Image 1 (cartoon, rainbow, N blue to C red):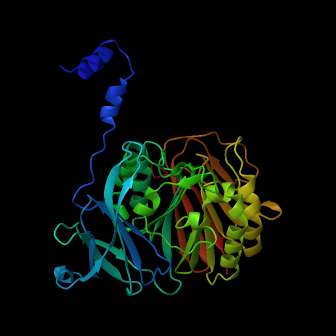
Image 2 (image 1 turned 45 degrees about the vertical axis):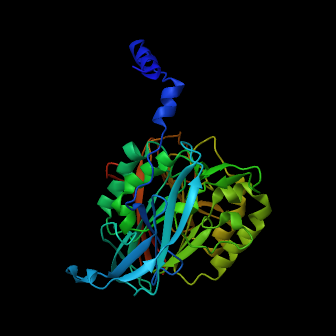
Image 3 (image 1 turned 90 degrees about the horizontal axis):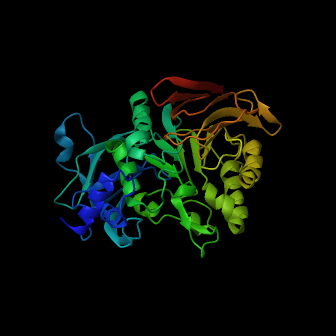
Length: 421
């Protein structure tokens, strides 16, 4: 028996819950990335009717390739698929578990696709392939659809937060995409936690686009950054998101972004940047003002991590509120979907204050994971709940938007309908 084994055994026999440092180091070793494609995920681009982005990783030294075709009722689509070489970046990532962790990260954008069409695709290296997955492109015109909204998964992502995500797909398996309102994981550079997040979604991420905005837990301290922190390096390795944020804020590349989907404009606001990066705040506000002023869509949804109006009695984000609230009121934004405060609250607020549903922007705070905070008595919330993991399904159909929140066990928690001719 080794000295480490003897020390560990002695601790167990003594009833100690403290694991020796050497044992902790041994447990923290990461498994290397595999030759088989892993962590496969779809993301929408800025052209949702004609494009789809896919990202995955493998062991270093392997190329990346995508094969895709219009799906057919039978297996004939596999005979003549189109082939696309991925952009491959071999990178060493300073993960929490291994400062020299290395993998090959592959990304590709399938272009010139037909609108409102089901495609099949697979990824690999030309020899070793994933299974075939399917997705549907957006229609060019406004058309009914639904999407899923999740607050922070963050803690115990695979063991406990996964049930919320999976129940969301059980309730609404036909959602066009899923938005994540930040704090996907707890430690920004923990590859093990990112592995849990990908395992929680599994094949669902490979068939339904996932659209995240970063939370403060996706950020790490960085004295050289204007915000004093930087988004984890794994963000851009693992996602391929629209690169149409404010031009003067390169640190928010793929974190401030927007896309249009069948009559809805979806806007991601990187709230840690907005809150902390005072030098770039005016440029971000100007970018958002222009997006809202020139919005051709009937519906507008902004999502971000830090809430403009908190559900927790001891938390507030005045910088974010003062930056965004005037534009939300000016341009009639419909939904503001948020995370961070680990409770549930929903209500409408106009420039004058709380109003009935449909008379001002609807603000929501929600949490998908098991970490819980207090929920205050809220004058703005028509519905609130504490210690409740939730997911939200939003149905968009012409002049009607129906919002339904469910608890993690599938019960209806809250519902609201807005009619906007």
